[in-house]
Amino acid sequence: MPGRLALALSRIAIIVAIFMLWEVLSRTGLVNPRLLPSASDTLATLADLLKRASVRNDLAVTATEVLAAFVLAVPFGCLLGYLIAEYRYFAEVMKPLLFFAFSIPKSIFLPMFILVFGVGFAEKVGFGFFSTIFIVIMSTTTAVESVKMEYLTVARSYGATRTQTALRVYLPGMLPVLLEALRISMIFNLTGVILAEMYASRDGIGHQIATWGENFQMKQLLAGVVMIAVVAMAFNELVRWVETRCSHWRT
Amino acid sequence: MGGNAMQPLANVTPLKRAGSIQIQNVGQVFRTSGAEVVALSDVSLDIKPGHFVVLVGPSGCGKSTLLMMLAGLRQQTSGTVLINAAPIPAPDPNRVGVVFQEASLFPWLTAEENVEFPLALRGVAKSERRAKAEEMLKLVGLEGFGRRHPHELSGGMKQRVSIARGLVQDPPVLLMDEPFAALDEQTRMTMGDELLRIWAATGKTVVFVTHSLTEAVYLADEVAVMSARPGRIVDLLQVQLPRPRTYEMLSGDAFGSLRDRIWRHIRKSA
View: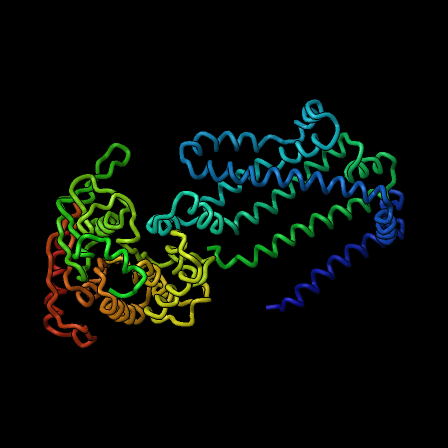
């Protein structure tokens, strides 16, 4: 069994290797540097971009939209998912319909969001919400079903009310699965908002990336990619860290 | 009865015979996709306060179903179930505590929080809850283990916590649904002795469901033997062995003949 340190070092080594390969391919001209600027150039551009007020503003706009969509979609989706799982009749009716809805690529509805909300904050948050809600509902349903029957019987035999069962048994019992759902939802949410920004928007980091792409500013484009990748991974790791803390009640 | 917290409630109860159970002509019929299954047929049993009664029988004889009725978790199709001379249409933790099979503790709560759970549902103040939980953990021999989570406890310890949780509201009746089934033989014997000690200390009426004939005779004042299809009581044995029960009794003639008598019933219905 390799130690944790050895594992971490191996991972870091792989990341370093990828950046080095990237650097070498670009520097030697094996890949056209106009298409693939070197890693060092990209990182320098990233540092440069982060100093710019306009870029910081774009990041703030995107962060606000992502957060707003997330804060709306998660509680709403959890509540719906819980109700669907708790009330059998409702579940029978809704579940297939949700699966239908989930299978449709959400991006094809983006033009409708633009027509209804216009280009701006509401449209992007709305589309982010729409991209996220289905996965939240479906994961919550799974999370509710992951709570053991025994726990519910115990709660019932000690006279728990419906609300008490929801808050004291379902919620903690669901937490491990729910956190995983939260992580995955954020990926959908981020994708939704950034797609909306790239498609039609006046601000936001997605809009910037699209513009850089159209203008063939590869260094900025790649710097933007790295920026978003780091933010997404940081969120993911944060939730995963919380997940491991309650992993012992996952059976 | 142990514990001072429930004293006022005990005074409210008009009946002196707290902890009595009457099961009268109880029947239970399940309907599954058109077919009718008779789970219990004409079951009657009178349990005196403070007695230790074991329900034993083959799988599908309805012993767990009967226990769930006593817990108010399930309603009979016919007949009457009375606890403290009153029916039990819904779970009533003031009259009945339940100890389930293994793994019924909430893994996200510590041992003491698990024991406090029934009190927390009733909005009992934190300090009072904690004191009561400590008292109960001490009773079941787990003093000092309150801060541990279930995954840090052995199987036997977990069931001790379950018993503490069942007793925390000081109900006159304790129902136990195969509580030691998942434990290894040695732990099972120890837990049997522990349970008898706790029972003697608290004076509860205990109804205990098991598959094990030895466990049944070792623990009980009375053993109700059940048979399947339809589930009914085919024999009621008085276990006259002196208390405290000891390991040596297991090899005695009296013990053996009681166990044989149960076995003959079960073999017949199997």
